[in-house]
Length: 331
Image 1 (cartoon, rainbow, N blue to C red):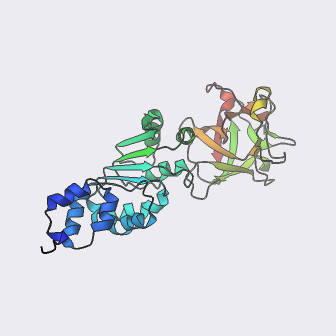
Image 2 (tube, one colour; image 1 turned 60 degrees about the horizontal axis):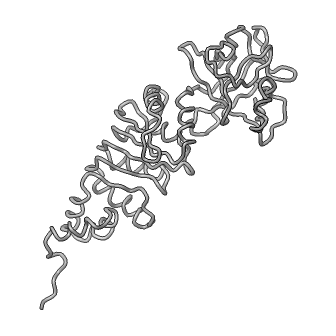
Image 3 (cartoon, rainbow, N blue to C red; image 1 turned 90 degrees about the vertical axis):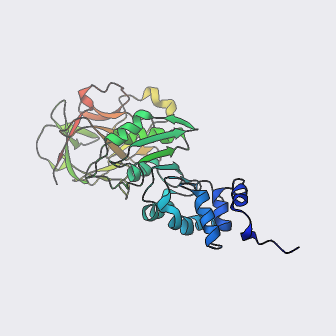
């Protein structure tokens, strides 16, 4: 009996075999052997490919460097993620996958801050944005808010697909996205910060941050700049321009929380420790630069004026004007 050439077997036999294998394994084993096999693999992969959870690094790199450049133009649905970070995929998707309808991402937040996914991928042409946690849709209001607040003039998002699905690895990522959706973008610069309730400036007082009557004074000028280099997290550090002291909040231990309402001073003088916070978000209230200022740790609420001092409030009442601050940009 003469030997049978593998290439002479009916195409139907190959497709039956392929159905028992993952697409990435079919691609690695058969793509590029000859034009006949390459054509079969292209047809079998079709317009949907899942690159998430590929454990073999050699197969993964083959899919990135060979398969995406060859078939990416025809893909409409692409899944990416574990165990690789977003930055690994972005250049390949940008260059080779221009017609995606759905980008499904299994987020790797031990490598990338979840806010980077939102900053990089939410764009003005996005039709659907879905957050998933344990195979359930969550945070629909958060996803809608993130789309609504997108500003092409500020964000450098990449329009990679019409629909975006983020599979979150933890509930904390959803909380972080909620904070991100509430915070507003600020340009780095020098600002004077006005208490709306009193019309006084925030200033670096003798002992703590406080308010003073409205007159130009160097201790009322603050430098506000992004805390992260890529400017994706919308977290900011605040310095007093005159003294060059960084504003910090002393963080109480949770068991002390109930005894900690009016003594948690926002300060430029107290020694920092592992229980302090120096990053803040600014949550815009109106079109005339009125903001809430919130310290960036888990159970912080917002700043408020307490007498003449500025403290961290645990008050949930968002209508109290003592929480409102207006930013006046100096330069």
